[in-house]
Length: 149
Image (cartoon, rainbow, N blue to C red):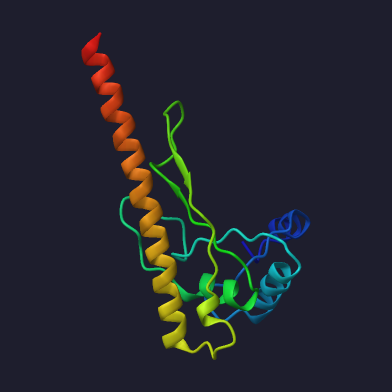
């Protein structure tokens, strides 16, 4: 997207921060941390991409954790039950926000970022489990209601 002038122009005017994932994009990192410190909200896919499978959590990258630590920001896991399709009911679960305060003020080397990423992954898995439990309970209730009729 970054090479297309029109998309870059649209992104800039919509507040989107384009990141060159092929290298360490320091400008994007600085812009992201500055946005977080000023109270803005960033939407990040901690797995490094959208998860098209949806069932299994992919490897969580350290970038989202690093931004949350450096920007002193909350992370709020949001899980979608199934891949979006027209005219199909879906569920969205918004978990409690959390901070990675245990990593604040520390040197963020690869080991620390991996540990922070593990914390993010655990919170995302908890949210995913809560979402699946909710949907399963709704399906059981619906099935019991249909059987009673």
